[in-house]
Image: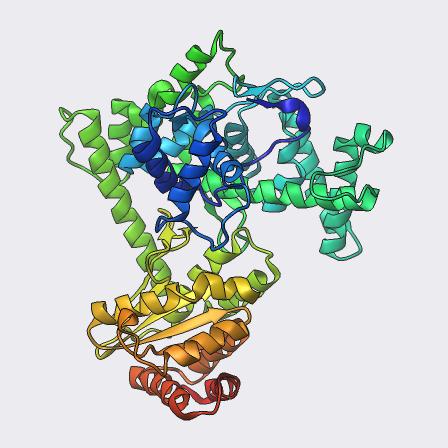
Length: 560
């Protein structure tokens, strides 16, 4: 049980990074430890973490010094808070958890469970200093709807202060004032935002500042400067978490070019239904048992699609003219799911067509610049999406598939699963996989050293033709460069023989795309020959550093 007295602002769940990642973790917990005592049982908690660490789903290389604490960190936050697992008195999968593991209509399930999350609750007891009364995800959707759009910065600065739904109008006015004054500010936007963070933090934490209680958990530095810096970083992290989790409902998408959060045009009626029917006031529960009955049962919150009459009307607006109205609600939802897939496929094809005349090149380059500055809601996701856009723009492939997930509006939703390449490109007589990362230093080698060649081997077997991998990172770490250099030279059965991995820094990839466009790339053989030549050079050149220098030079002439 958490006490809200420890916080003065809203908090998001920063672990796991996306809510979908709790699925395999809950599955491992319940398959191996259901029925066993969790609370206070550090041996079981450590055993669970060891099982998770040994699984194919775990992302990371370092085993924590306190695995029991790491286990609690994973299970007592999002999985417990959203009602997917019961940890008291023993481990038990809930009804909502069963639907989660079935992985059917996850957007629907996430909508139900996120909108039921409230402060306070029996899991989060009321603060002694701040009167919490809010359903954070419901009010976030309301803000996006009422204001037309919302940026991650606005979420960090102002939505984080919406601790009581009665403060809603005050928060709206703060955001509108922020927008007005940003246009009048004489300095840089970065300076303006930093000033806003400082002002808001000094207001939110006035008591701590006045009483000089400035120590943060992360540091022994008790200076005001350090306090503000830490709080600003926390607010940004929580905003990032709110963006990732609310996107899982698929009610929210990104506005093209600005990447601000907006209501999906396809979901406006569904959002209106929720805003009109879901109580803004958190429920008061007589007991933990009553609360659990509410949070564990996904159907204690209704969606538009639960109403048969409204669902049939929705199907008609999506173009379905003949509907068997005797079908039950589940069968109608199956039809609804198929229609959404059709709409999604059409929107993705529309975006592909927009890309093929090169008009989107300036936007693609601008997005890469935003990614490098991390001035974008989800840089790793947008890197995968933007590299996909780049190859679609170059055109002339049989297929170009990004393995990241897109929403119904054709905007990026989730990064590619860890067991597959980020991008697959197939031509008549060769194939390419794209692997992208924003990791750097030794972390890059730990994260990519095995997965990239493994994905290459899988693709080689899948394509059954000459296969190459283009590995793109902001900067290529020397360990990764040396590793790929040697894997390209020696037969490794596990990876399908000699790999053909060609590393490019993000700046060099941008050059690569510009050269392709300026030379009106239309002959895939030129691309294959260039990739093959870099690999052949790898076989005889003195070392990996000289190889990288030559690759960078050859980028300038690949499409000539």
